[in-house]
Length: 275
Image 1 (tube, rainbow, N blue to C red):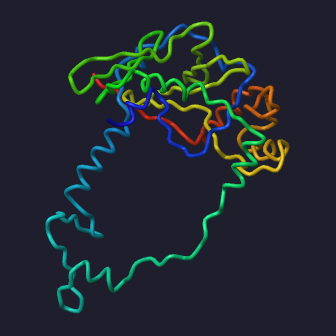
Image 2 (cartoon, helix red, strand yellow):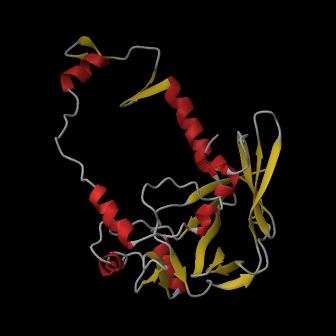
Image 3 (tube, helix red, strand yellow):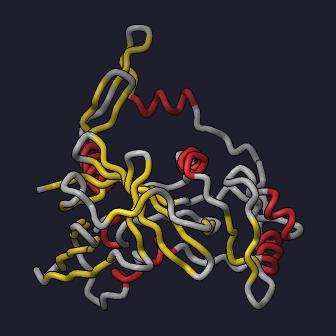
């Protein structure tokens, strides 16, 4: 079905959980709703790209400066003699196993879990509602943005429609503008999670949360873990739960610094506007 079926904006598949960063306030100036430049129907750009890549790969292969039909046999000339491409591969050989042993993270996981119990990002949980729609899952769908909300519309294999509101602006979900860009600010018990919404070339929309996994996954202490987050955002302070485990980090919002750091976010979703 594609990434639409996984959720609204965050169809992320990182094997490492992003560190939750909670800011002390929303960014920019609050606005009441999305303007006409953003409202509309969207499909994930990756769905289109993946479909195009799959269709091309099913039919063709690229051989340096040639496109070859997969049901044909590509031959190269070597010293005036024809040579099958498979023979060329045999001559070249395949990449040998370096013998490098992957790092064993089992011990690290145990240490990390003894120190941390990260909260799931609010923006990630938005997509979970679609997975709870029941045994019948959508086979196709769109993300629709209106003045004051974002919702998912899907259709199943029997032609039945389904709909789920993903974001509705209100006291706990604020829409703001800063430096010409929209931001959705999610209020949590720990502070504000912030995600950027940006439109470009009139047809493309990007949704970019503050999503970072660049932290030590094998810390020896909370201080070590905190030190490893300095490149994510400066002066992060750990937030503890009742078990004295780190559930996230608090931060003081500096809008310009926030935008600069956000450019390096691990994840973003690109959407294509359709009629």
